[in-house]
Amino acid sequence: MASQGNAYEVALFGEFFAGDLKPILNRITLHSEYSEPMHSREITFEPIDAQYQRDMGNEPVVLRAKKELTRKDEGWILYSYLKPESVRAHPEATVRPWATCHVVGDALSFAQALGHTRRSQIYKRGYLFRRGSLVIQMFQQEQVDPNSQEPIPANPDTLWEVEVKTATPIRNTQETPLSQSIDAVLEVQLLMKGLLDLRRQDV
Image (cartoon, rainbow, N blue to C red; front, side, top):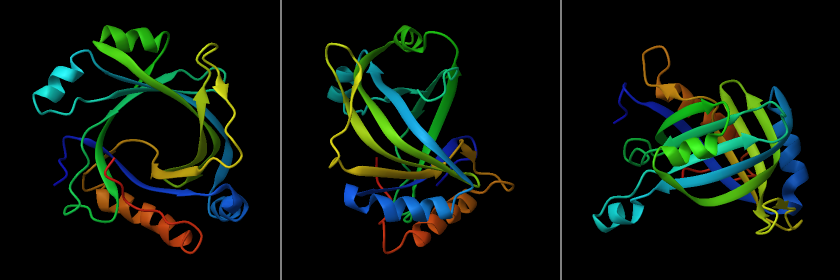
């Protein structure tokens, strides 16, 4: 059951082959308020004692750092998710506690100073759409050149991924009930029916 003390992300996920890009892009664009290119760098950190936590039967909380590369002055965002609410509580969409923090300056050193060690890095390139309180990201993952640490352009046949989610953390209050956000992502699911299968994931 969602707690009023937590802030949440509500999301649906999907994927499709590159050959279906144009009709899916057209339909999402038609039902969005605006769109723009996206190219982001995302780095995953885990606690220094992550292995010990796993040995004790606990899944360590992963810390993520994200930077949008298309906006020159954009800083880093640090964020973290907790385990999604159960499918019994929310069968139609992924609902998970979500904490975010904007960082000015060296966010990567800051994350390490918090007791985290760097685990992995990816780049995402594609399109970002806004629809009301939602953000829709449609992207291909780019691998990282081990020498230059720069992104390697995705193969044209690389699978496209879609995330439909609340743009900012939502508190489950009378003014902003989670059901409102769940209805919003389900509207997009319905709009994309027949072209793209959007579904809940226990991520």
